[in-house]
Amino acid sequence: MYERYVKRVLDVAVVLAALLLFWWVYAVLAVLVRVKLGSPVIFAQDRPGKDERVFKLYKFRTMTDARGEDGEPLPDEERLTPFGRALRSTSLDELPELVNILKGDMSLVGPRPLLVEYLPLYSEEQRHRHDVRPGLTGWAQVNGRNAIRWEDKFRYDLEYADNCTLAMDMRVFVATFKVLLRRSGISSETSATMERFAGAPGELEGTAK
Picture 1 (spheres, rainbow, N blue to C red):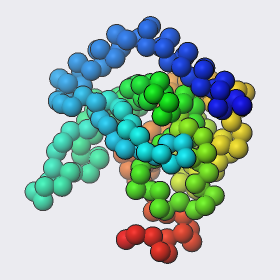
Picture 2: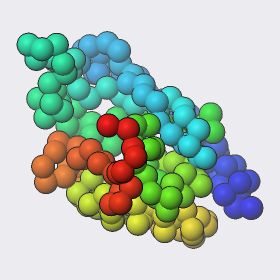
Picture 3: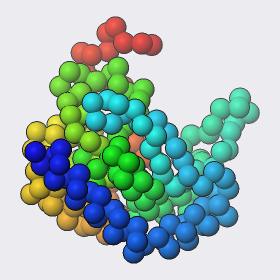
């Protein structure tokens, strides 16, 4: 009942209020991204949502289009500019996702939407993270963000999917501001963002190479 009705009403109310109050932040960021990183200002990418339905996720662009001699994009570390790092550390790059929330693709709180290419690699248990809408922030984000192992990230996601309540959402929402103030967990130990998911143990056999 909460996840299907009450949560959706709260999501829309909070997002509309935020857009009315902070529309100017979007305008300023859009201009800065255009000047410092070029076009397009908005980065759009397919991501799986509730019940694994794919939608377009919107974010402010944080990387350049720099490519190597082979024509392939350079590693994230080389394409991520200081300005892009600042956007990511403050999570301002994720503000366009409020549009995804209005559309019903996402919620304010829920498991973060990962890459579509990871879907065949999930274990049956891990697939349950898609029982709820993905979120702008989530239980895994306030417990380590990108600095924790994939196993821990999924454990937190599944814990949230099994305990999607107003009390849980308020707990995550409050904790999110603390994480943003500390700017913690932005990167893993070996990547500018997060290492790619290679698959759940015991689930790799039979998956596409």
